[in-house]
Image (tube, rainbow, N blue to C red; front, side, top):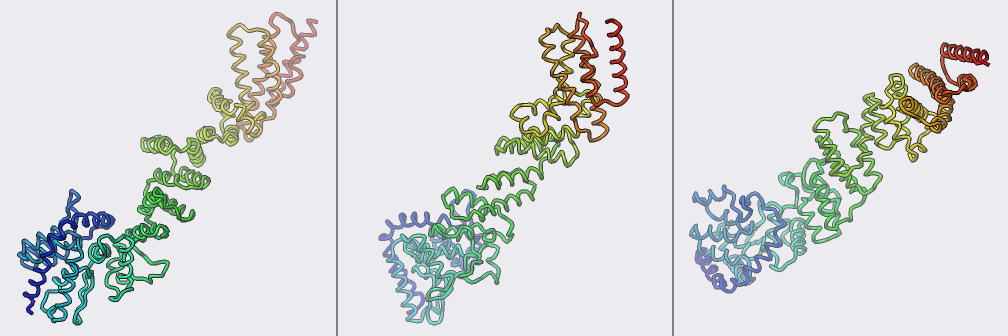
Length: 544
């Protein structure tokens, strides 16, 4: 039998099945398309801007129009399940019998069985040597086979196909229309691992960056075997216990092993779908590595967002605080304010964490005033109290900046906070009482006062005189501050005495003598006070 006569006979036999398969075609195709959504279209078939339908690679389309044969284009359409486009192309090329066979590519098994029988007849007659290999590949696909051997000739329909298209060939042509994804995956695994009668006839599911590498193939049983992310997702769909660390390994997508962009986002999607059989260590590693990648790109505020996904509360707080301490700035420009608003208002990071990071920044830049303020806002009362005593209080007293110092000390003086501050009563409380008494006596001079108010001030002034000497002096500024406070306390005693003895001759020396010697004043101040006391005592003796 000649090649033309045999082909016509086969195509005429298959054409009888058109009406029989018509009713099944649409439902079977719908089911196949549902299963095929997980596959990415390979370079030969590209999506249109509108999404669907897909168009053929322009290179193959030009080849068919230039008289170089329509069979490569038809085969490419078939590998993308573009049956209608393949039929139209065959029809436009004048290959009407092939178009009739293509119309029955999906549906009943009867056309496939008839084409398979015809291929066997051709093999027995030895006529396959007169038929184009591309046409034989198309007939092999239409017969529901991916590999067909005859008289030493092997027709492999998966030749030069990437793994996604090879998998699609198994889904659309080799397996039954109602086959599950798990059955298709198993068939494909046998094919690329060589566990069938034809050996290995398709490529392994390698990532795109390894598809052209000759050394990419590794042992299938190795723990370090590299497979494409899409393939791992197929395995996870089939076997829910598939190892997630293999899916989320960056090498399944990119040659850069430090690129965790897709790994992290895919991890979040899988967790939302209740795939949570990933070890805590692996999960934390993905979070931390992606946060480090974002930080290296200057997106440290988004790195905080990633770190907030850490499950362990201690690790989560530590990671966020470290990021804040490395990148928080005291400069109030638009960029810093926007990032601070995003972190505090959008990510709901506690403001205390931000203030503590700013306090660390102020400490590095030697700005004690800002350091004390931010420590205060961060809730570190004791540390803020120490900074105030060392760097702020003495200078504020000497320069009469009472209101500024009082604003800081008032927040520390709250009972719930003062009890947690070391040496508060002989430190910050002394300065706060000193400022309050100075302001109270000044207010009393400006208005009418009652004896009760003066009696309330008397023990406070006496207590202040006894505690001024307990202030720690670290440098000359502290000693000057203590001296000024002691001298002011002596004046406060005299002022209070004058207000209490208004109209009454109350002995001044008996009032001042027990307290003046306790005040830590310099020698010249002490001599001056003693002279004043002696003069007052002589006047009292004379009047007596």
